[in-house]
Structure formats: structure tokens, C-alpha cells
Image (cartoon, rainbow, N blue to C red; front, side, top):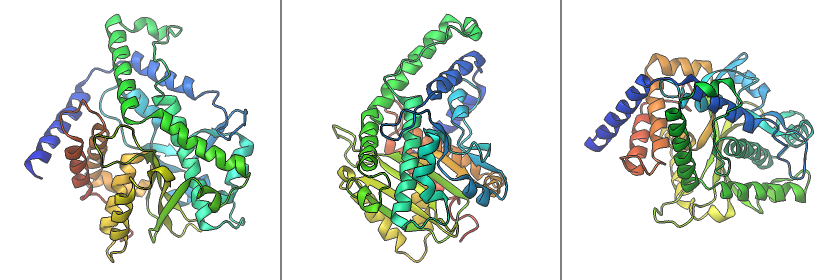
Length: 380
């Protein structure tokens, strides 16, 4: 580790130690969790034109989760835990012990549309070509991200102390002022780094696809997006999905539209694919990413390719799932702590108020990932 990365490491260690020592504020934590639950409740189906209430939809089918788990438990991103942890002791866990019923779940579609659209993914005897299957999977993955943005990151939603709750009387004026300042700052940073307007643009593209045809195929998705996918040659113990933009231009006026990333299991559950769905407007900005992936994928040894896609997924994802076997292996050899640090560095790389450059933080994160096996764990 060079001197710059050592400074970043010291900074992150101090950050983690400070969070481990901070005073827990249970009342602000309750307020934040209830704010999240309130924004989530009563969500309408994201299918264009549908006004029915959304049910809890899985990004990854329960049958698949049961297969990789060998039971009913996986370790997955827990958004409620992350939201509440802002005012608790310590840094958030990357994943938590989760029943498959709750893993990768958000209110996305009504019961009818969740079944009608995605039976091509979930019902084995429905014959679907691979590209259409992947596009449908990526569509649901994106709506998961879109739903989270509307619950947590929508800059148009005013944050407040819920004065109707008994616990609000126990929040001091000093803590209230600090809370409102932090929420205002957070909203400002989010709006600068990830345009919610751009999220709507991507959502409108999918809406146009489904308004044009009730059961679209790959050619319909190709009017708005370009799909790249790579066969991993195994069913790994690590899965993730997410969306983010990519640009090499630090002086850009506008952020490019987000691309959608995911590891998607084949319907046979014998292998999985790393996929990227790019809006047509972002193909040029993504060219360097795709060229690098193609070069690494064509090597006989796929470890560097796997490391690269682990990095992309951890950077993009708010929906991580791993098996208990992988989680335990990471904990036993100390790699889980390094993984959490790598993810904290990636979050900080997006923040202009961080004392270290985005490049240094991202290099630090990638350097840590070199000693961690996620995709190739047990499958090399």
C-alpha cells in the first residue's frame, strides 16, 4: 500500500472508530426509520398507467434464493438497518441475516403485473430467449433502485421531525437543528451526484417499452438500451444489482444517464451472467468500461475480470445478496471487515466534502478487493 493509500486507510480507520464511539440517539433513529416506512407505504404499482397498490416484489425470485441458500436464509442488504444506523453506534453492516421472504424486496408492482410481467423469468416451462430474460430481470432490478430513490433520496421530499410521535418530545432542540442541517446537506449532495430527474428519464424509457407492447421482447428493449452480458461459468455465492452513471470527464455539466448492472442467474440455475443495460445516450461514455471488460473476459484466467465486476457492483448496488457460506468465510478470515471498508470508501468517493480525492478512495477500495473473493469464492 503506497503512502497515499495508507493515508486513506488511516482516515477510514479513524472514521470507523469515531462511529463506534458516537452516542446513539434512539429517538432520531426511530424518526428516520419511520420516515423511511412512511415514504414506502402506499406505493403504487410502477407499471405505466396502473393505479393499484404495489405488493412486496423480489428482485431475485424466492425459488432461486432458496436454491443458493440451501434453506430460507441469506445475508442481504437491509435498507431499514442502514437508514436507522445514521443515528446509531458504529457503521452499517453491509449485509444482515435475512429470511428469503424479505431479501431484495420492495413494493414494486401490483400482484397482477408482478405475476404477468415476470412469469417469463420465474416459470420454468415458459420458453424465453436469453436476452429478453436478462432485460426483464434488469427492468425489475432498476425499478427496485428507482423505488429506493423515491423513498430515501428524492430531493423534493422535505425531511422533518415527526412531531405526532411521543418520542419527538425527547429530541432536544440541539439534536433537531443538527438533524435538519444534516438532512439538508445530504439532500444537496445527493442532488449534485445522482440526478433524480435522470432516474425518471430511465423509468420513462421502460414505460414506453411496456406501453408499446404488453409482453416486449429483446428487440423492443433495443430501441432504448444496449445490453452487454458475460457468462460467469458458475452460480456464485454473491449476487448484486444496481444502477449508476459513468463518466471520465470531471468537468461534465450534466451527469450521463445511469446504466443498470447485475449478476443474474440463468433460468437453469446452472450458471449466472454479469449484465449491463446501457441507455443509448450513455453508450459513448460507457465505451471505456465495456472495452476493458471485453479485454479481461477474453483472458483465460478470469480472476481479474471477476475482480473488476465485483468493484462495479459494489459501487452501484443497493441490493447485495450472499450465501451464509460466503458470509461465514469472509468473517472467519477477516475479509468481511475489509469489504465494509471498501464499500465505505466507494460511498465517500461520491462526496465532494471528503478530504481525499475520488480517485484515491476508489483506488483504495479496489486494492482492498484484491484480497477478497466474492464471485470466485469456491468456484475457481
